[in-house]
Length: 419
Image (cartoon, rainbow, N blue to C red; front, side):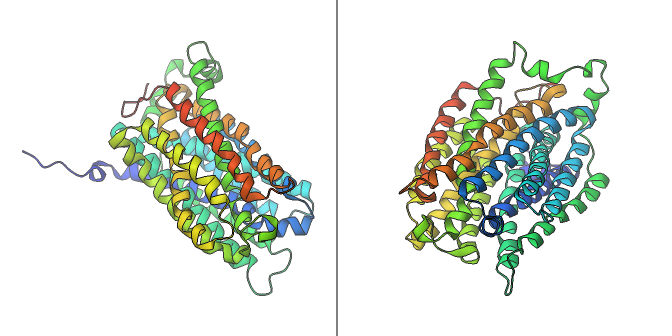
């Protein structure tokens, strides 16, 4: 009787290259996005705006990332997943460089909005590229590995911020050099162009006579409308909760105790941010493997319940650095890992001709709805007797809502994608 190969030995070199391209693209996307969150303290001082305005800038970026996801999902269905992926990476890289030149809050907002378009488009094109290339039995694992790139990008952003903003003699405009570093991912597109090709399933469909048409009419048509709307509500609930917590986490750790933070400063908070993101990395990475054991839906519900409990507890631990350090990796694990579900989960619900459009639309309209999270938490934090730590607890209700919504959607885990 032949000995069965380990699962990773059954994956082709081409499939690993696709996964590397999507993971590195998502990692660099996270880095560029989080550079702003790391620099909030200095930007607030430089441009003289408050927490509500800082949250609004984050909200605008996320709103535009939603628009970018919808746009590039459509583009990926039309010109290909790989080409769309390269376009998004170039876009958010150039936008980061542009943000470094900002002379006003309006200019900063416009550059961050452009970065958001590229950010949303990267996930829409990268996730469907992986889902269509990898075998069904290992699709959840692949998306988990891809999604873990976000945690690495977050850590890289934190290290760069500490090095640039915390450098001896760093001036009030040191944030400009931080944003300049965000242009570096543009070089990665050269490797993608040479080494990553379009999935066979898309190539076949793109050349089929019936490939033309309006994909939005399909996903919002009578047969798929209910599913599309429920899926969008699910992604909106999750992303309101996530962005409400993790957009403000660096500011919570760095801000003085008297202002509702943990009093660690930008450089000091690095030692607490990295453990959170290490936990996040393993949460992303293991979600698909756990789902393969106990089921994708049950795994998602367990992550939602754990996050709903952990966030308010963490937010009230500002005066206990030891407790923050111990809870940080656990919060990172359960507060991030569930995102590894969406890449394969959404891809399995729609046919090839509209898959990237559906992926970009449902995930990113949800992101647009959830984009009010940073502004909401920032506004609540300004209320008398509140502070960021207390405001973070608002997000628990949205984690719980997501745990209910997942039950209303079909789970087609492990099945071949619909042609």
